[in-house]
Length: 359
Image 1 (cartoon, helix red, strand yellow):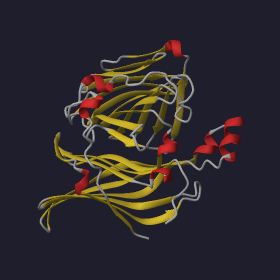
Image 2 (cartoon, helix red, strand yellow; image 1 turned 135 degrees about the vertical axis):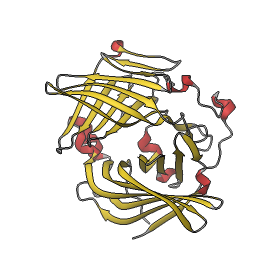
Image 3 (spheres, one colour; image 1 turned 180 degrees about the vertical axis):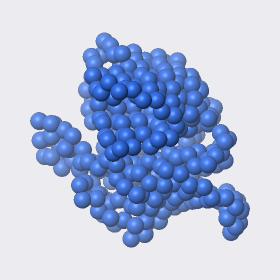
Image 4 (cartoon, helix red, strand yellow; image 1 turned 45 degrees about the horizontal axis):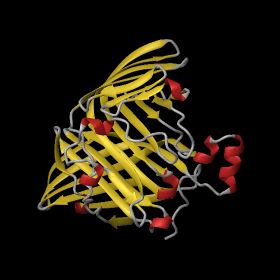
């Protein structure tokens, strides 16, 4: 079944109210929330290495599913190796061992940290299984879609904020796994997210990906709000080449999801092909993700234990997470003529918070 949506995220004239300008400031990558009820925040880093290794490290102020509770800082690592190995590790600490600067990205969770200045970053993680020393050097200026905030509610009282601090950069990592150390180089990405309402109450699902192919850097996302908000659609898109942004006006974007199937582990509809078609006058960029395999598929309730799992099942919580591996293809057209085409390996995700919308 072919599913085509065309929508635009209207520009938000809220820069002054939020204390922002169109230029990203270093302090925006510093901590933006306190430990108040309902607020949450995280800093995300991922890298795709030249040998096929994939590394994701995330620093959290709270558990994603419990923002109403006091701060509970932790760090997670997801490591996928070329031989098919998959490792998920974490470090959890008390609030006393957590610190974060308001002026820049400088976050410490126990001995783990992420720090940087919108250009260069250092990331460190260590537990008994994995130690990671990573560096990220930006190739693309920090960027956000308009103010970076998506507002919900009649008075915009609820929001989710997203800052791609490093849309794409050169990454290197020294990874020690079970006592064996290996060094890697590749491409990396860093973003910063925060909000004041549980995401399961705001969003139904999203596709999200970032990719590098040839000299092109892409950030692409299609967010669908929850039923309460009319399943409103929020496209987010940026394409750059050699560090210069070529286009990021979501009103010029068409999103297309094709070749749907039901993922047996989660029961969610998944598409083998996604297309982000960006047209700016005579120039058109067509970015196509084609799935080859699923790296991760799980129902969120299966990640819970004890009373939390029981409660989630009781209320019918139906969240699921998927991560896919495949290729991204970038095609540039001038009028109807294809003038450039490049391909590269890519990873992207589908996050489901709510029940599958009924057509």
